[in-house]
Amino acid sequence: MRDIDYWLDLAIRRRKTFLHAAGAVFGLVVLGTLMWPPVYESTAEILVQDNRAQFLVSPDIQDSASGKSAVVANPVSEQDLNSERELITSPFLIKEAIAGIPAIPDESAAGMMVHALTLPLSLPTLGYGAIHGVEAPSLRDQWAIKLSKHLKTGLVRRSNIIEVSFTSHDARWSRDFLSRLISQYLAFHGRISHDPQAEQFFSEQAKVLEERLRASEENLRQFQVQNGITDLDEQTHALIDRISQLKLRRDQDGAQAASAREQVAFLTGLLNRTPDHISKETRSVQNLALQQLKPQVMQMKAERAELLSRYQPNSQRIREIDAKLEAAQRILEQEDHLEVQESSTDLNPIWVSIRTDLEQAKTTAASLTAEQGTLDQEIAEGERQLAQMVNAGVELQRLQRKVDADKQAYMAYVRKAEEARAAQGLNASKILNVSVAQEPMLPDQPSFPIVWLNLVVGAVLGLGAGLAAAYWEETADPRIYSPHTVAEVSGLSTVAVIRDEA
Image (tube, rainbow, N blue to C red; front, side, top):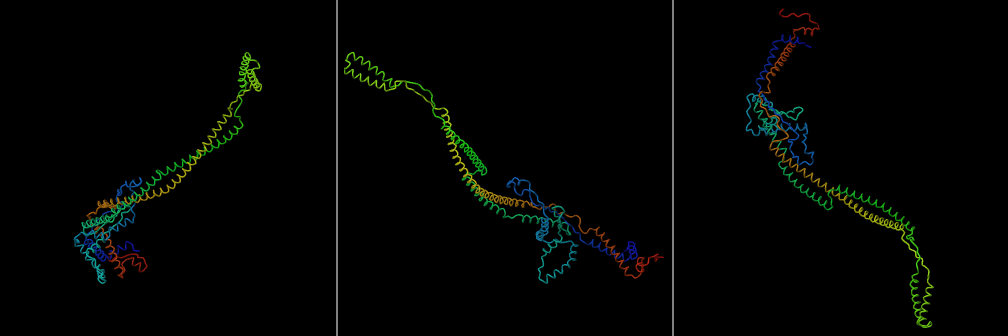
């Protein structure tokens, strides 16, 4: 392993060779630096976004309130950024950028010289094309290929920014070409992000779907009118509540009717055991026949006494009256001439009360039984209506799903039409999902060559070349000039060194 003293001693001892080699290399670097035409680099930055405008779709079109919130910006993926890089460096855009230039601009003398020096490198390709009949590209295509070699893109770390740079020997041309390229890039983005026929297509489809939606809504409305449905859930719950209340009333009436029938049976048995009449009072009265006959007898006796004053006892008139008196007397003797016993009775108030309660119980039982029958009919009618409501609900849900599906399809095409209309306006205003964050700059200093860096590099290369030449000459010379060589040859250490000057 050589130390620095060895190399210093080698450079001093072989100084002519060292200086010639180092000077030649350093001179070539300086000459190349001075002769190389300046390269100017113009840069621009492009910002890539997931959505190009926060107001792309009117929030009034959104179905839900959540859709009216601020638009959420999704992060741009690395694939999106790489796609934009490939797009901006595509040969198509480069050709579009130079399409409006009438002629290829003349390069500087130094640039022409570099082109002349690099021309031999393309001769094998030209010869191969001539042998196999490959059509040579046009001058403008060759120019586009050449420009693509000087166009570079890169990603700014932790951002959605693409840095685009272009280098040439003309500072103004670097900026102008990069500006033209970015302008074509934005125009191309506007073309690929909007189809002129899209708005018309979506609008026509929206009209068709609107008619379908109206037909579905009309079918739903007619079905609701025919079945008397305004709010299916509310009406179903109301009907179920009504049926439950009717069943509760029926059960209550059944319990009351059973109680009334038991009461009727009990009162009937009690009524049968209770007399309906009770004796009120008893009195003795005279026989009415005797009361009517006695005055007649007395009258006939008076009449006989009067007749005796005028007639003989055996006269015909006296015999007739005697015969009447005898007949009347026999009647009186046959009748009970004593007093007649007369009794009076009245209704039993307990029996009347029991009979009244019994009639009321029978009436109540009959009324409750009749009401039970009416409730059974109402319950059956309610259950029939509930079954119809459930069946109608299935059909109603199908019609509602049809309306919802048609509405969603209609709103989707309305939104698409609005997006297409907004996209056309945004394209006209050049509002895209990509924007120029930094316009191409006019470089004021060349990016290459960097004179001071080239001189430093030339000095380092010259130093290395000088040492290499000195070392090569040292190894080619069979003479021994240094203690290190003595040690390598003899394996002995050096005690002292005597210079030539001594």
